[in-house]
Length: 86
Length: 298
Image (cartoon, rainbow over all chains, first blue to last red; front, side, top):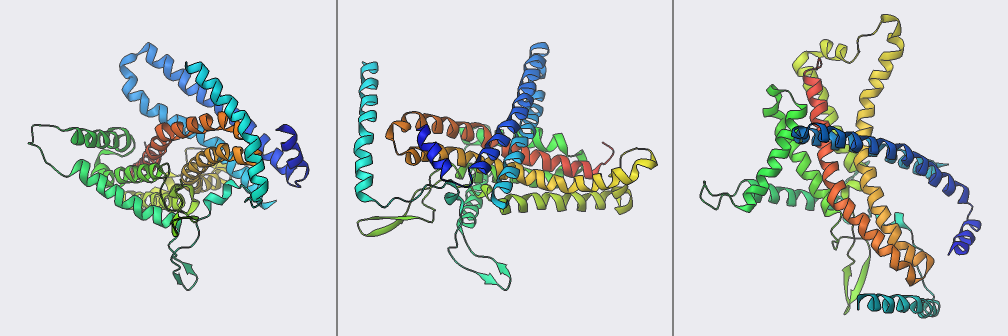
C-alpha cells in the first residue's frame, strides 16, 4: 500500500504541494484540538461545581465549540486555495 | 460463532482482491477517482440573462427541494392542529422543542427584547432552513450529474451533496444577515451614532490603527459566517468520500474492512452533531450580530 502511494507521489509533480497542504491542516487542527479540549474540560468543571447551570451553559458550550472548530476549516480553505492557485 | 463468522468474512476479503484485480484489468476502462468531482454542480436548465447566469444546477435543485421540505416541516410541526387543544401529540411536542430552541437559545441570547418580535421569524427560519439543507445533504438522493442504465432506462445515480457545500449558497445567506445588521443598526441608532459605535474606547492616537481594523472586522464577519458553514459541510462530505474512495484508489477490497467503519463513523458524527450545530450557530450568530447592531452598548 505504501509503496503504491509512494509511486503515486513520485509520479506526481504536485507531491510537494500535497505534503504542504496535509502538514498545514495537521498543524492547524492541533490548535483547534487544544481549544475544543479546553471548552469541554471547562464545561465539565462548571457543571460539576454548579449542576443547576447546565441548561444555560450548554448553548454557550456549543457556540464556543463551533467557533473553535471553524478555525481548522479556515486553514483547510486557505490550504486548498494555495493548492489550487499556486 | 460470531468470531468464526468474522474470520470467514476476513479471509474472503483477503482472497477477493485478486479476482477483483483480474476483473479490472480485463475491463480496462477505469475512471480516475477524484473527490472534487462530486462537488461539480453542472448545468441542468441553462438560463442566461446577459452576464447573469441563473441556470438551474445541482445546488439550485437542492435549494428548491430544501425550501419545500422546510415549509412542509414548519406547517406539519407547528401549524396543523388535529387533536384537542389539551392533548399534546408527539408531532406537536417535536414542533415545540424546535420552537423553544429557536426562542430561548437563539433569539433571546442575541436579540434585545424590543427586536425579538421582528427578528425571531428570521433567525428561526434560518435555523430550520439550514438544518434541512444540511440534512438533505446526507440522504442519498437521485439528484446527480451521473446516470446509469437499468433495462434501457437512464436513471440518475444516488448521491450525497449538500447545497451548503457550495460557497455561493452560504455567502448569500451570510450576506442577508450582513445587510439586515447594518440596516437595523442605522434604523435604530441613526447613521452617525451607529458608525461611531463600531470604534471602541481607545486613546485618539490609536485611531489610525483601530478604525481600519474595526471596519475590516465587519467584513470578516461575512467571511467567517459563510466559510464556517461551507467548509464544515465540504470537509464532512469530502472525508466520507475519500474514505470510500480509498478502496478504489488502492484497488484492494480488504481496505473496505477499515474504510467502511471509518466512513460510517464520520457520517454519524456529521449527521448527529455537525448538521444541527452548524444550523444553530449560524442562526445564533445572526441573532447576536443583529442584536449588537440594534443596541451597540451591550
